[in-house]
Image 1: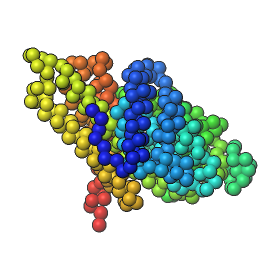
Image 2: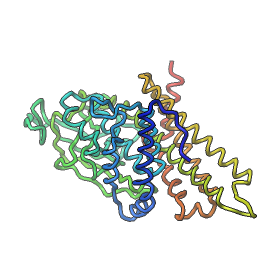
Image 3: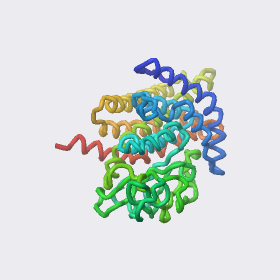
Image 4: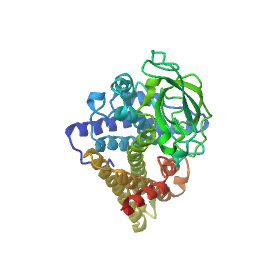
Length: 399
């Protein structure tokens, strides 16, 4: 059944209604076939993002003066949850795309905002977020991909430089990058000095930059329509006006963005869990054994109750963190708590959904097994749940 929502405005209710309509018409009818096909032959559903962009659902958490939807984060996240209840790969993609706009929206110059944000927030351009490396996952301060200055600017905003400073050239590799090979731009965090974490900077690299290549799509357990590849920078020229923020500010930008990104994944995991719960409850009411629905068995009914409690608790956790963010208060600890609780709940609820369906749940005739496979990675990306426990404990124990 649809989640019970307490929303802050009539506009927010309208957005949820619009999202549910798009999910029912554009996502749910396609998800099973698309995910199965992409498992054998990787395909990225770019057309879905075009639909979401035209509906205004890719710009919601950004200010109207920037071209965004001007919605509180709690509303945006509930839209992500609704999308995830229909198609998890797409919800993850929406969260990733929103993350890629963060550096420019929060730290870009007026010129950068004017030239870049309209395409980012309209959905005309799709972004990728390049942070992790083969040997630098959770420890982003150890990344080795490097940008070096390449000379005077050309003044045209392309090639080696621009009119406001020297251009750069980037060499290195980024791994586990969603949208790689399909994105129009790459929000990339690279080393510009040897000063540890203080030596990282952020660049928005055009998707058609010379020397930008990609590895083969990763063969993953799930989320087959979330194409993930290695991004390879082979002496890629980047204009000087594509440096976002100051040199050395990249670590701060990345970590602040990840606090918000963790909430996107938390909301998506909650939507996935809600979908698994709905599937299990519907099956339990329809499936009959010994002359009655299996839902009449107390042991199974209590399992459904525990699944509902897990989903409801997960939703409360991410909404609490989002409301702190909307109020301008610190929310890093609460974002880590939400990411931990919501993704663990998704793994538990999808596991139980397979159990409720029994042998049917282990087959591809029902989506429970797909949801189970999709849930696992939520405990890994945007910071593993072990990293979330480290973040949480440090906040609790400091001072």
